[in-house]
Length: 228
Image 1 (cartoon, rainbow, N blue to C red):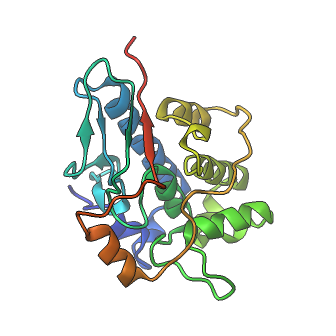
Image 2: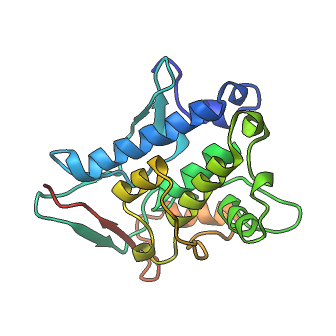
């Protein structure tokens, strides 16, 4: 793609200044629409399971295209939900990864390598703490502070937090996410995220790269919308 991938912009000090809020908002909306198509409208009905900035390609106008379906899973026409006990994806982007990506786009910081002098939380945990303490403005990338409505950006962060709830049943599906993004409907208050503590990265890489690792305590649930 003409502009390579989202991570080459959003996490680069010199490149992300080209991503003002209208551009980032367009990227967020495009990713959301793409996911809803995969979940609801695609003939194969697909969940990606490894959504991250490096898997979002940008065309010459910086419109997003979801790529790398190596860990994706498809469903039959009559299947409406699935559960799995196997951990898949990239550490730092465990499902539901869309919420993590939203907060990264707003902050310009990578979840996995985020560090803060006052705590050991990852970016997701920091966003949750900032939300509770009414300090979300400190989370926003300074590049977009002057090109955005703070209320609109705060709302996107809240939607991101709703997408990463500890109990998947508390989170919205993609059609609900798109409605939240495109309207002023009242949002529920998010609860504590399910994946917000930092840990030793080397240990985590070894853990999640082990093909024999399973967890009965971290289940992912995907609910697909029935065809009309």
